[in-house]
Amino acid sequence: MTCSLAGTLDRTFQNLRKAREDFIPTHDAREIGSIISVSPGIARVSGLPGVEFEEMLAFPGRIFGIAFNLDAEEIGVVLLGDHGHLRAGDTVERTGRVMDVPVGDLLLGRVIDPLGLPLDNLGPLVSEKRLPIERPAPPIMDRAPVTEPLMTGIKVVDALIPIGRGQRELILGDRQTGKSAIALDAILNQHDKNVVCVYCTIGQRAAATAKAVAMLKEKGAMRYTVVVVAEGGDPPGMSYIAPYAATSIAEHFMEQGRDVLIVYDDLTHHARSYRELSLLLRRPPGREAFPGDIFYIHSRLLERATHLRPERGGGSLTALPVIETEAQNMAAYIPTNLISITDGQISLSPTLFHLGVLPAVDVGTSVSRVGGKAQRAAYRAVAGDLKLAYAQFEELESFARFGARLDDASLETLEHGRRLRACLRQPEFAPVPMPEQLAVLLALTSGLFRAVPLQRMAEAEQAVRQAVASVSGTMLERLEHEGLADDDRAALVRMARQALLDAGLNRS
Image (cartoon, rainbow, N blue to C red; front, side, top):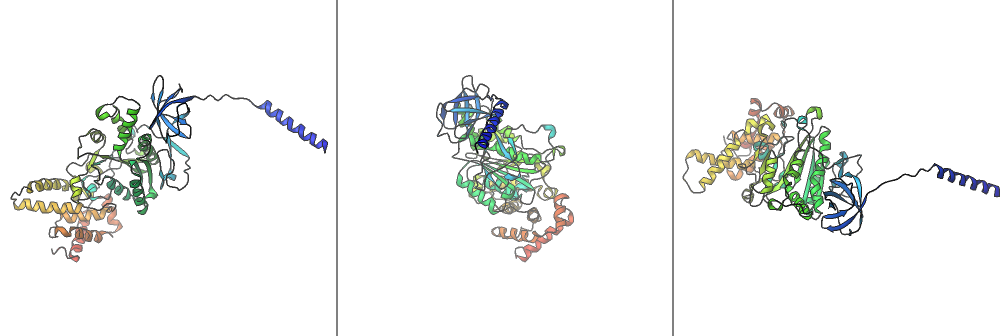
């Protein structure tokens, strides 16, 4: 027994001796600084002589920050979390990497924050790949023309202000005029279009975000959607990085050759959060106290939306940034910046909204600079003159308010315009399929609604939509790829006329 114990001890000490001899010490150099001061959303740090611009720094309590100001004596850091427990003198450590976000199919159906942390109580996110939130936009030679339409299911948009895959279309209007509803309708309409959607909320109320997510779940849209949330109560740094993180998530799908739609709701809060951070970091203020590079933070974001060439996979990233105006002032600083960056704008009118004309799109000030190149030929054949007719109607309607006596042609223009406006009305969260849109517009341009009383236009439209809801697959294929042939036009008009006759709305 004694000999066995002695042998065991000898072998143990021999193994320890061998391990000690084989051990080779290594030196792990780390740069550690300290906090000078902490303010809401930012911190000033000393030390860290090798830190790089926009490098991620680690603070106590698993709080991260981004090195924003690299001054000679200190570093201005944007904090990405609750700073309540941080104190002057706490240590700060370099991470050696920039801010990144997880990407991949595992994010579909999830609600996350800009750091990639889940907010939906569906378990942790385990992603094999991460991308930096700040990435250079694709070079010009890697881009292809925007020719394929992105159907929103909104009649006034698809017919008069078409959006192409790879386009940047600004949605702007005053508060509570339906900006978010248009963006969410566009997401809902992608359920069978093989388009991945990313919905980025910036500075919104938690209740509004929860309502939007609940609606997307109810309509079955979360299976192809990623929601990135920076709430109004979050630090300004989270609102600042949110759109960049969402764009990196979207770019991953685009680089796989897929079509992606991203919504920034809204960039007004993004600009204000950047202004807050810049003023706290004592950067020189400019117009309306915004820093001089406020244009750059949005241009480098929206330039990442594009349509890639087939050699690069042929994917596309379509951006719908949302911006809030004050008293319809489109000439304000931030709206004009974004109008100059984007490829068109959908302008919403509070006057139309209060009159119950929904969506409250002001056709006269809305434009798509890609235009008919991103519109199906069937739409061009039907809606080619509708925008001009609508603009003429609005001018004539304004003139008629003064009680002027109008001739018969002007009265007919007014009646046609009122029915056109009624046809373009649409409840929110109810996108209209393409054949039904074409049938309604064809019925309008063919004069089938001329005998329909104005108060029964909604009933007439619904009858036409129900009649063409079950068009054959071959006709649908032709409408999507070949345009509106004479036979198809005649068939749709015939179905619309019969539907109105059956409903007792047209005797012709």
